Length: 243
Image 1 (tube, one colour):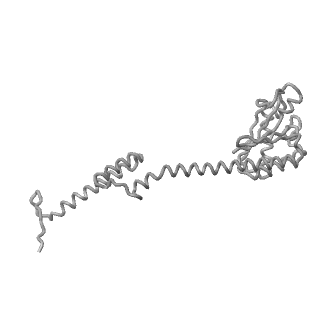
Image 2: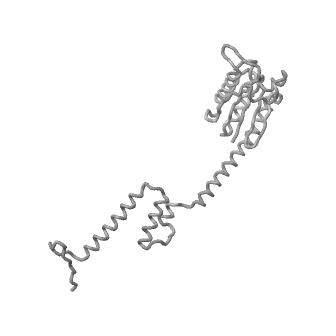
Image 3: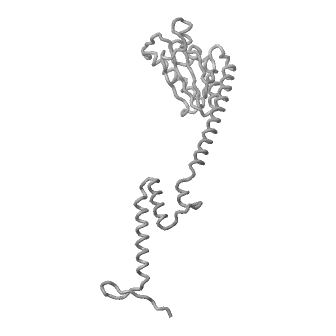
C-alpha cells in the first residue's frame, strides 16, 4: 500500500501533502503567464509576437506548426498582396471598359442629335471629354438651357447613365467681362451654366453622387481670345468622364 508523503509547514502548524507544493508552483506560473498576456494585449503585434516567442521557447515549444496561433496572427502577406493586385487589375479593366462604352454611347448621341458641328468627343488615357459650344446650349449671357439643346442633353444623360464613373461638368467663357444684376463676373456665368446643366442631367436619371459642377471662367481657353471666332470657341460647356 502506497504511503502518502507529507511535509510540515514552516510554522509547525501541521502537515500538508507533497503534491500541494507542485500544484501551488504550477498555479503561480500559469497566473504569471496570463498576467503577461493581458499586459501585452494593447501593445503592437511585433512586440506581442516577441513575447509569445519567448514564452514558447521557455516551454520548449518553439517549433512552427501549420495552423498555429502565430500563423493566424500574421496571415500570408504575399497572398494578400497578390489578391489586392488582382482586385485592382479587375477594377482597372472594368473602368477602361466603361470608358469605351461611354465613348461609344456619347458619340452616338452626338450623331443622333445632329450635333457634329457643335460638339466633339475626345477619348484620352482613362477618360473621355465631350466639348460642346456654349451657343448650342445657352443664349448669349444667359444661364437657361435653350429648347433646341434639350434633345441632345436627353441623349447625353441616357448615355452617361450607363456607367458608374464620375462626371465633371465644366463651364468656360471668353475673356470679355460679364456683369449684370444677377451675374457679376465670368466666374458666376461659368459656374451657373455648369450647375444648370448638372442639375438637368440629374433630373434625367444620372446619379447625383456622380456629378460635380465647376466654373473656370476664361482661365482655361482652348485658343487665343483675339477674334470673334476664337472667343466663340472658348465659350463652351465640357463633360469629363474619368475612371
